[in-house]
Image 1 (cartoon, rainbow, N blue to C red):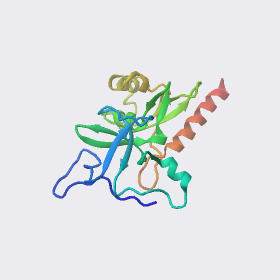
Image 2: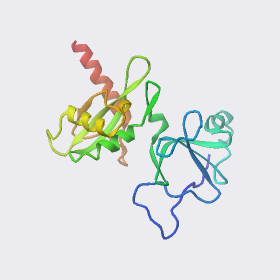
Image 3: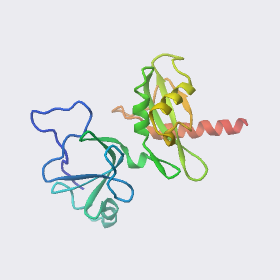
Image 4: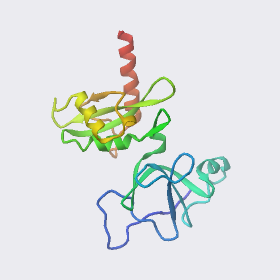
Length: 205
């Protein structure tokens, strides 16, 4: 499957906010919820696109094409948000946590945590709980040992994010975060680590 560009920065312009650049002429982009209804500006949702640069589908794979398109719109799997007329990717749809029917983007929590002056890096993964929900657990790298306690980290998140996005899975302080060769955090390794930690706790009870 080949797909061309959907956004691009006009020649002579620049943006240092981390946005994905303006939409190209003749291209369309929407941010929608799970029912493909447009979200309100500022709310996260999946980015879907259509236009002459978007592929018609997967080669010789009708099933994959059906799973990727909705009413002619290509579903990117990227979770985006619109802020002051600019668009930002905040997570991947497959990374979203679901807590009591509500969606939590780990990347949003990570970005919030990293605004704390004592936090160097942070990664958030989901911990399964009864009822099929997940609660977020944060792995935090501090700028200096003992700079924050778990309760202080939780209080910081409580002041900045909605009640359902709180760190109910706890906070773990680590020396570093697992990353791949290009510096992307390996959340799968952290999820495995979380489950191993919980199993060890249960074994000691």
